[in-house]
Image (tube, rainbow, N blue to C red; front, side, top):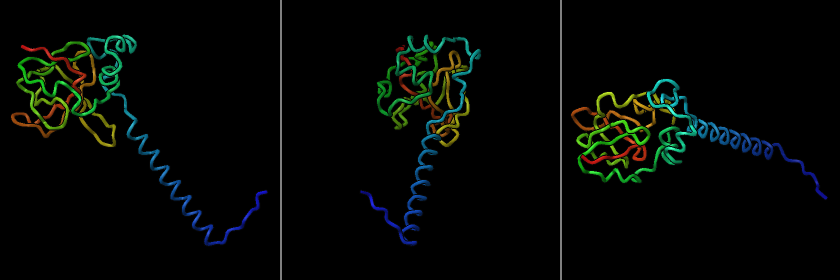
Length: 177
């Protein structure tokens, strides 16, 4: 049979402090997890804004699960996983969702980040929106024709623009010139 035990005031204080620390750490962990996974509505999901529009089911059929996660749900591929990192031929990089021409190979450079990077997009090819996920504000890059999430742009690129368009390789298709 279970016999109850009374605790001294010092033991109770230690247990209360431990429980408070556990509660605090647990709450902080849940808050951090929620902040890292929460994503505000972005331009990629705005209906009626883009020339190419499909239902989520149509996009899933067209793109497959990995490309759908990136282009339609603003996911990110693992760094150094894209074959386009090693693509050095002359040509054009297009949106894998709708075929919109986005970047020229002349603007591609090796940023060392693990994602295909460009210092300039083709005129009118992309739209940028504020992305406030991940506890920071970044500039999201979406296709101007279908609103598909491509990646982000940063101000640490090479001349002449100083921009680094850091794109997901699965969001792109390459056509050699």
